[in-house]
Length: 330
Image 1 (cartoon, rainbow, N blue to C red):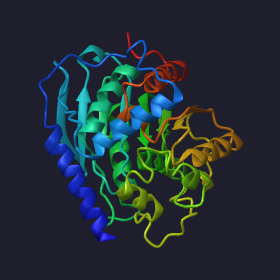
Image 2: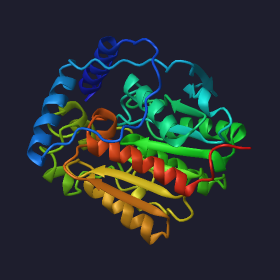
Image 3: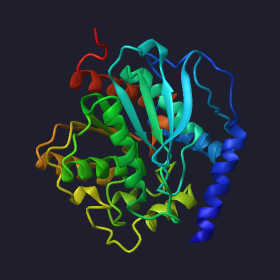
């Protein structure tokens, strides 16, 4: 198994070397529409794009937009990166991003680029990205402990009612576990949870893990390193795969904040996203699930030019505006 992590680390490093850093440019804006394809043409396009991605041929660098603040610091020893939007200095909203990567992949330029989009979509004055400790060197609850430290710092800086927590894939798992931890320890919940392609159970038998193994052109068999990583997750150590500490679909979700779940219809985690909806509904949460037809895992981050991704961004913007007070303080 260790060889898998070495291969993955080398893959991430090669991406960072390829992407480099571009010159500062104007901040991203939500397009009116993205690229539209028929079902068959869409799969051909995604296969081509992700093939180039895995071969390291896509060069997408990161630089903070012109006028934005970008800094790195630590909170209790946890590395954190902060982006601040100068157009939203008076906004009360703060965005906390918990990145994915199977608990073995670190924060990358893909997430920094996504953070700019998240700040624009939510009218947040700041986005904080947590570079939490990774497996196999650091097992549960290392990542959760790091997320808690940063969240508690944001409580002091912004107040719980102004915090939006985002997590994708393993970061979605972590976002849910963070919120459960807060409840169990009588700490205030964030205003909202936004979960993209969340990994909600460490079990390996949800049907979509098999039916979508070939159709998920991001996390499926096309990506053997990460496909193996979610089939044999190491972050939990010797903890049972169905333990609520690793599989939040078995946790008590009552009193968690409003939750938006976005999944791709072809992704490996499709069924567990649906199971999370069922559990959250049973626990009487304000929860919304959107399934984007024919889309793979984490499609909005990796394929932002597609119309489905644009629609998912617009849904996030609307969800935040409907469920939070206006962003600017008078």
